[in-house]
Amino acid sequence: MEREEKRLEQFRRLRKEIRGSQDYLVVGIDISKDTHNAFMRTTSGNILYRRLIFNNTREGFQTLLLQVEAVRVQHGLKEVVFGMEPTANYHKPLGEFLINQEQQVVLVSPEAVKQNRPLLDGRWNKHDGKDCANIADLMCQGKCLFYEYPSSELRDLRNLLSLNRKLKKLEQGLRLRIRNHLVAQYFPEMDQYCHWGAQEGLALVRWCLDPAVMGKLSDEELVKRLHTEGRTLAQRKRLSALKDKAPSSIGCQFGSSVEFEGQSVVKLLKEVRQSVADTQEQIEQACLKFKEYNCLLSIPGFGPSLSAMVLGAIGNPWRFQNGAQVIKMVGLDLSASQSGKSQGSPVVSKKGKAEIRYALYQAAMVGSSRDKHFVAYFTDQLRGREKEKGIKTKKRVKLAAKMLMIAWTLMKKQELFDPKYLAAQVDPIALRQTVKNGNRGYT
Picture 1 (cartoon, rainbow, N blue to C red):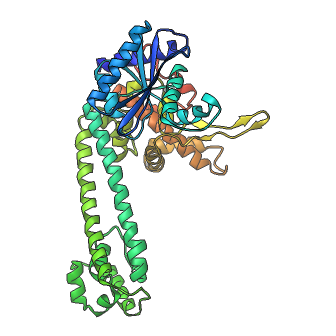
Picture 2: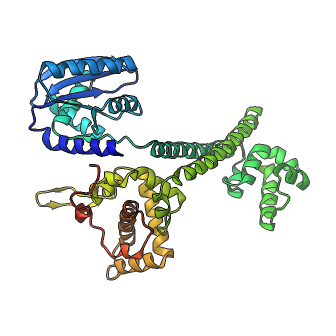
Picture 3: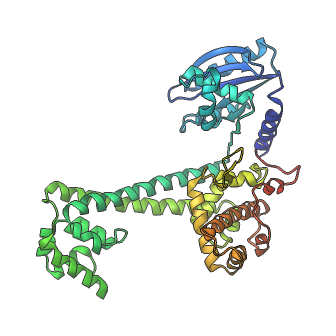
């Protein structure tokens, strides 16, 4: 924690001083999978080393440090700052290596790199030599971001959340494969009688995807195959209706490969679902290591999933100087296009973490309909404007932003939810004053 606070102070000083300082050696690095390109210059524009190519190995990293130190000494510069664009996960080994070597490291936004590229020479062309110079140019303008180096516990949580997202996408892909590929071709009538999230639907695909096979099964054999001895009356009626439609199905000709695919996809889907359950259990265990987790769970509408996502995204709550930065992190800040007499209406920017933004909106819907404090707050917000078009959606989005601000505040204070937090209005501009001067925080 002390090292992170020290790095934070260095970054804030860097942002303030770098434009007018002559003491910095700026090293822009273009990241790739096997080799990296480095460009060295001063803030005044003097190019000191046009292109250094080094491997993505420890020897390559040490070569970079050796060459950078030589250039720094030769030109009498006091400090060195390394900057890079986050490219997949390829930048992380180099970033961690440099931080462990007590070097200043910053990130440059990919969007800033894209917008600044044509400004270097009036052309849009892209190559490794130009990209590292582009990164260095943005660093000299102070347009860089803090390189967060979280604790091992927080990294474990983020890795598990990332794995959980990938597994859920894989699960959804397999469900769509079953419904839109297998069932739609070979037994279309099955789609209206089955729920593809239930075990019964998967059992039908695995053992009865061929209409000819299902039409010949007796009720006892069907029960035995589907393992549905305790069926309700509705289930029996549904299976009976499906069995009656099987002989006249319009499905395509069934083959052995289709049977093999059906059984394989269902088996794989079950394995993925088990992996999702195991991952969620690991996420819960990782969250219990943080005191802030119970604070988030105390907010109405915040379940284990959303609490884990917010905890993983915010991490150390003191790394944000003000609430506006927290709102921008998930894209709930307002943006508008205004020029001359044209005054556009501000809308939510929808930048940042879309998954958390969606989950917060769902939490706002739950809170505004089930918790008495949030219901009263939401009703008060609608009073006098209830007939405006789309006003409920707008107010729920505003409530989602407020819930995020409440979560951030509770994480800082390590307190449980109190209805008093609903008294203040959510104003992203006014939120810049939420943290007094002198508090810790990241930019």
